[in-house]
Length: 113
Length: 436
Image (tube, rainbow over all chains, first blue to last red; front, side, top):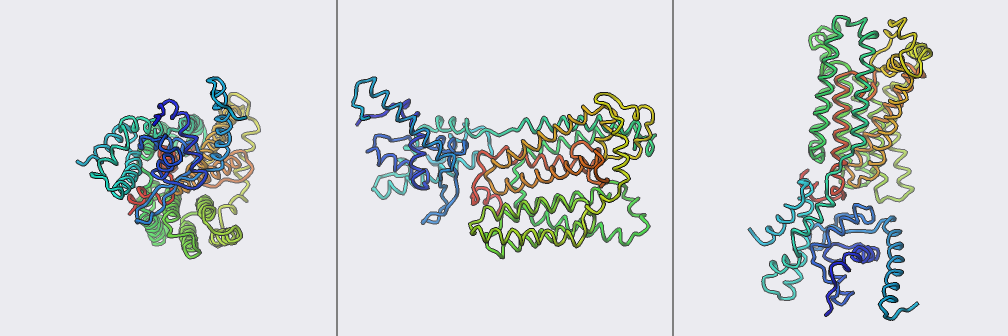
């Protein structure tokens, strides 16, 4: 399996995390699992490194956390997207689209306009 | 020590802001629990060790978290407060030299200056201590704060009812049992306590809201027994808390509006019952004096009134210290002080709106309202639009009780802001654990 370099992951983790949280409220471990599942285990984070990303998004006001008791009775910290986060996500997706198409054009891969 | 503890400790070692560590630890530990449960389901041997291993390098994670969870210092607010204190010392010097204190305590003016500096030094120490303290302890002692405020008022009222000639008052002096201290201290204790009750309410259901409104009404009535002046500030700060609770409740918009009217009614009833400080504005004497002194003020420098007839300032007091400052140093001084308050309040409101933790938000918005009303009221008094009430200009007027209580409030505000990067959720288990 191809492993993705740290540099590439760093640039896109925030976007992917924000997108997942925009779909539904999630807690940290759930986000890691979902990232792995959707990318067929290509994006396998060192799990602790998710939290600086989440806390950074929260500090920027893009996501908001709240505590909720899980079925097991333990409190869990969930994250939900904010209005500002929704706007930032749309902006970052547009940026990513332009970026990925441009990279594909430069390196000569397939690019579907 | 288990591998989990080793991992968590190593992460936390990198996070320099100690107060943030327990929050980081709690979330990472919950993640390891989830991962371990999943691995156990998959039949992995030593699931705990594998779960910890999957977390990655603790130093790298800790350093990244450290970059995010730095204590927030609001230097703008600190600078505004310090400049206002300096302006206050200068304005009080004008009063001490020629005005109120000159006629009343001419032999003691030197001592008064030293006491002023000593009060400022103690106030700054109070601000610093409270800024570094964890404000969530206030939630835990909310009953105590409410009780102490009630006992303080009850003691004062009892003593002075039994002492109609004022002998006990003179025995105690003008210190912590003086009229201003008795007005301001319980008002602040009530405000902090109501913020705690608002945070720890069981739900947003109507009985809980009525209980909260009832406690607010009791505090306003009790405050009326000692002073009408601080009732207005206390009521405004408590109303902001009640409306904040309503705004964050899951009730329907129609229900929120209905309850908001009820809250306003519950707060307004004891205000009307006790009659507020507003009725004291009818005395035009001080307003006329302030206007006549300001009429001769220059843009820069001492006014002819100040230089030629210094005793004209004798009618001014701590409440009208800004008018004295304008007369002694010019309108530029007044514009500077008003501008500083404008900047200070703008910064405080903007920061308050960014605070996610409900208790922190109740406190910070309440403090903004507290200072905001005081400033507007005192500005109107100093510019001669309304008569004087014994509510002083925050950080500028030279009363020890007010300096200390203003310093305490700004210290609590800075503590809330300092911790706002990690103290967030309504059901924050760490904050709740502290408060159990």
